[in-house]
Length: 479
Ligand SMILES: [Fe+2]
Ligand SMILES: [Fe+2]
Image (tube, rainbow, N blue to C red; front, side, top):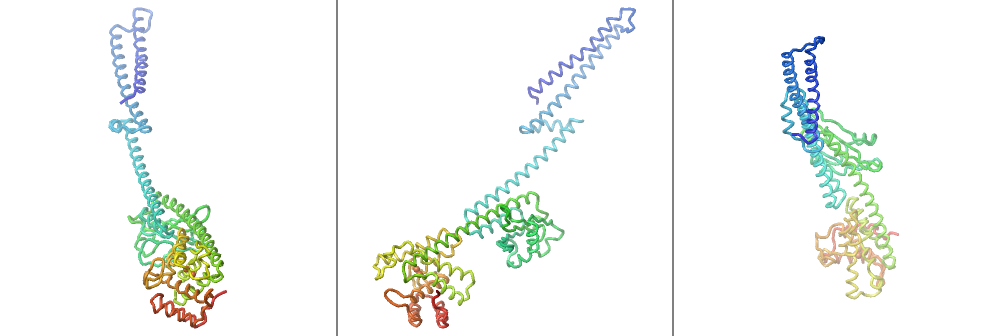
């Protein structure tokens, strides 16, 4: 198929060709006209003239059609190339041209191969684009659905392992040169210590060189028990010049190595994870500041009432001691301390006339006071870092027989941490002077607790530990 432009080219060729073809004919006529002149040394007879005229005519016609056909093919080929650059290629023309013998056919075949490779590359690019799109989609779903940062990075790691068809993955955070395993995907039943030990050499290398480390697959590499058997890629998680951790992916479900596209994905993903680490840290810092401010406010609220001054700090100390005595892990002890500091923060919303009223409270005033666990919960609710404090704050006035408030929880519905906080809270209340009574001595306190335990209101095991410490003289008020 030709375009108006190529038609014009063919027309110009025809005009020029005819123009040039006429020249030998004119020369022939001229030479023949000299035939009668005896002085002429060129003699062309009529017969020779006719033969030459026919011969020149035939050669001119053959040359014309031959060259026009060749030119038409070149024009058609050029049109195909042009179409490839600007629109869809006309494959029919290319196939027809490729059937031709000679240079045009060879050119068309080569061009066909180039097109095929371009098409394959395009296909590969689309695949990579789709993979990246899927990853980003999953990551954004994860970001909007997960509640804690650790869940987030675990889901991101699972997505990375899936996207690269890897077998195992590990994500480490680093602080002051000390690495911590934050997420592991791979062999079940492997402890954090085993993963850390297997990764130590690579983590040391990355700490030293701060660049991506790639170890290609080796023969039989999958038959070893190594947690980070090659192919392996470990990359530092860098954002704004700070290294936040390391991402390692190992093994390939289909054998072979990670491709260049895989490494590009790893690089992009590691950058995104590093940004998430920084955001989480900023958020954590902001939440810690908010928490400290609220804790300071809680103390200020307590200070309004001379009888409750220092209450939260003392409750924290008693709860910590009971927790230690019961053999709780350090994380639970920390929860007890933080929850104690904030357990009465809800009193911030209660007016002094009710909060520090010297006499007995009426029903309405009592209901107002009973709202403080719910108000306290709502104050801490926005803090993702302190979600574990919500339960003890809301439920520190619940009782095992369901007679407490605000939800009337019973038995197992009240967590061990909250039970300890409740006992510590009551213990401080009994120890402290009140407008209507002096602080109680240990025997009187034990009598009160015996009564609560007998009524099935508080945890007998927690009270047993409290008694042991009272007997050892370890439950004196601090400060
Ligand atoms: Fe309270
Ligand atoms: Fe309290």
